[in-house]
Image (cartoon, rainbow, N blue to C red; front, side):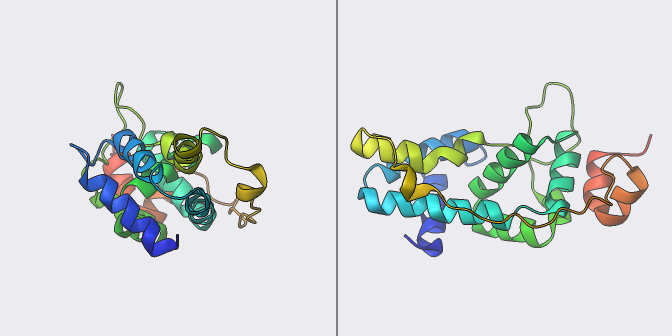
Length: 180
């Protein structure tokens, strides 16, 4: 499975759930679709997913997740990128290229008490769960163990500095961190 096929898989799953905004339902549907594939194909899905996660490991995207969710740990950033992948190729690529553009997505708004975080941990495990559903076995560790060098994260970006966030991510800051 290549990157184009991966995105078609995500689009198919999004089209087969009642609410494509329910990313956990999207992830569950992807697992069902994967379970119908050959085990070797499912392993390649993990490789594509790992590559997308590595490619989206960016300071600016982490800052966007921080604004959107009212804070963001390293695990939270993984789950946020899972959510972004579940949005489909266009949203993922646009968000990666211009994290401030995420302000245009309907689900994004001010963090508030009771609103669940914008994240989808389940997307991180689609290949493993699909493989298990297809074979009854765990994915062979050597088949999915990939090392992706994570790029340098800028340590000169203070996510708690409103002026800096407004300068770097103006639309998201205005939406998620309104002036008092």
